[in-house]
Length: 470
Ligand SMILES: Cc1ncc(COP(=O)(O)O)c(C=O)c1O
Image (cartoon, rainbow, N blue to C red):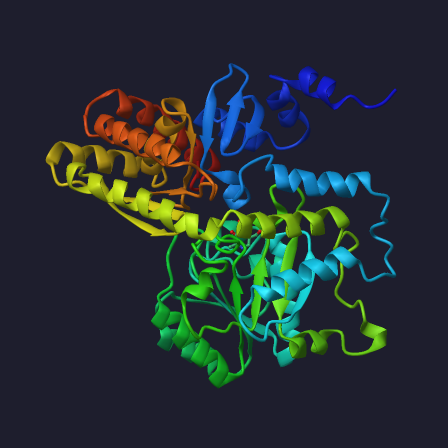
C-alpha cells in the first residue's frame, strides 16, 4: 500500500508534541509549551500559516529568514514538480550536474566582479565550513577572526566563530586560533590581523543577532586591513542575502566592497530544499582542488542535488521577476515609518534598526517611575523576558509570529517575506501599537503573564544553576 502522508499527519495531529517529546527534543517542547508556541499548524500559503482552529497567522519569523518568497510559491513548486516528473538522473557522483552548472552561472552573474566560482552544500553552516577550509588552503594560515554576537552556524568550524558563549559551552575546545573582535573597532581588528596568522575575517554585513548593521567605513576599513595583512574577507550573507536587505547582497549596499568569499543559503532554498553556496575567486578554489588527486577533496554526498539546484534557480527568477529586492526597500520603509511614529508615544519603545526587511525593534528603560519599576522587575527575573512581553501577545492576541533578537537583548526582530502586502505591514503596526498600549499600563494584565513566565525562568535557573534562556 502506498504511504499515506495525509493519514500520518491526521494521526499525529495534536499528539505531535508528545511524540516529539518522546523521541526528539523534550526540552524544546517545554520551551514551546511555556511560551505558548505549541500550536498545531495545518496549512501554509504565502506569508500565512493556519492552525487547526482555522485561525490565520502572519509568519514574520520565516524560519529565521528562509521564506523570502512565502510558502508554496507557485513558480518554485512548478520548478520542483518538473524535476520530480522528469527522469533526468541526479547524484550520479562522477558527473558535472547541469542544473548545478546553471545555478552557479546565475549566482555568479549577481556577484561582485571576480567572484566566479561556486561550491554547493546543503546548509548555511556548511557554506561557512567550506569558506573556512578554502581560506586556510589559500593562505596556508590556521586562524580566523569573527565579531562579537556573530552567528555563522553550529557545526564545529562555524561554532568556533560564534560570538555568543552560551552556544559554545560544553563543546570546547573550538578551532585553535579563532579570535573575537568588536564590530566597529578597526584597531582591534588590525592588532589581530597584524600577527600574520589569520586566514579569514568572517563577517555578517548585517548581524542576524540583533540586526547590528556594520557601517560602510567599518567594512571598507576591514577590507583594507584584510588586504594589507593577507587575510581573506568572508561575507556571511546566509540571512542578509537573496534580496532581504533591499539589494541582492547586503554587502552590495557598499560601493567598492569586494569580499573574497560570499556565503548564501536559507532563501536560496525557495523554502523547500536546503542548499548552501560558497562563492569565491577561481584562485581560491584552485588552491583547494589543486591536483586531479584532490579533485573532490571537499565535497558532500548530497551536494548539487537536482531538487536543490532547481529550487535555487527558481528562487533567483522569482526574486527578479517580482522585483522583490526593491519591494523589500518599500516595505522596510513602511515598517520603519510606522514604528518610528510610535516612539514618542511609548516610553518602552526606543527605535528601529532596519535595512530592507531585516528589522529590529529596540526597547529600553522608560522614564516614568512606575514603568521603571516594571522594567527592573522583569529584567531582574530574566534578562530575556522583556522582549517576550512583545513576542507573546503578538502571537496570542494578534496572530503574528516574531522572535526575540538574541540572548539578553530587549529587541524584537522580524524577517517578513519580501512579497507581503501593505495591509500585512499595517496588521503588524496595529498589533504592535496595541501591545504597547497594554504594556504601558502597570500594574495590568500584560504584566501578570510576564510575572508568571518570569517565575518559571527563575525556577529553571535555580534548577539548572545557570541562565535559562526562554
Ligand atoms: C548569518 C547566518 N549564517 C549562518 C547560519 C547557519 O545556517 P544553517 O542554520 O542553515 O546552518 C545562519 C542561521 O541562522 C545565519 O543566520
